Length: 371
Image (cartoon, rainbow, N blue to C red; front, side):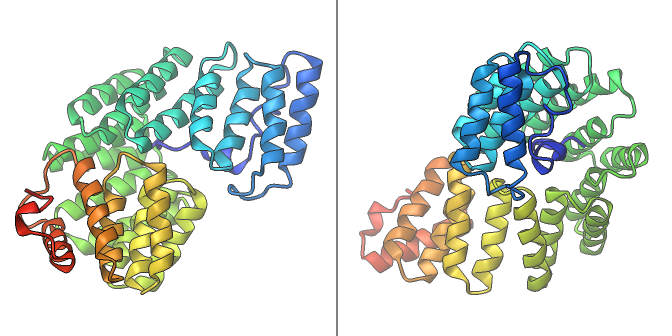
């Protein structure tokens, strides 16, 4: 399944897309600048090693070819790897709006949609999807991306519609089948979801995503053994899948296997350094191991990457309360409540946490932030 992350070849291969396109960029000056930047990028083997000088090289190449998708995409990837995500998203959008190389334009739009989803910006995510459709108007891939964004926005009906449009264009598209399976699962149609996940696995045996859908189905059915088996199989199928490592890490942690969980989640963070969900999961394991300072670092990274997502603030509140810092814990709890799209139901841990923090700070009960 196509994931809401940039294609592995773009990040792992580190800006090799333009080199594969012999005609781009158009001018000799732009071609030389891009070639110099690509050569320099060989000294940056890890995703977090892109320093300002390397970013500047790609910026010059992009400025020399302002309508070239390869040059703009490489600049966006450089910014992405340097963790300058706001500028990276703008650069991806520029690449997606370029005049050449539709496949690269689609890849840029896909990553822009991912970053917008992480920020909790539904309108920006949909705008990126529109650029993906403009890049590849007759392909299934933009509809798969549209479905993934709809799932991320909890719109299972829209996800189902997009997946069906993709399958009209390619009945064996594993990504579309996985989107459709997840949409049915969200609607409670477990049997249909199982059939679609099996069909997706048959369509692409080397894709971990159908196995992850199977793990999600097993979780919903309360079958931990099947969930663990599916998550392990997903990692074995694709060792470079951050989503597979995340799923296995979470599953291992829930079964008390903290060492294995930490190994898988650390691997997931290496594969996808800026994914907020991975940072929260890793921070949760670190906190459980008593590594509170490292856990706080992970939660803060997640909050920075996804400012509209409440979950990192709940975890920060928990750690800060354990640290005896009721004031900060209460402040983070307030952020969690403010960002939550729905009021947490009775019995949610946030209520007891707020009450304990208020009592510790001796605030009047009638001033409770949950009232």
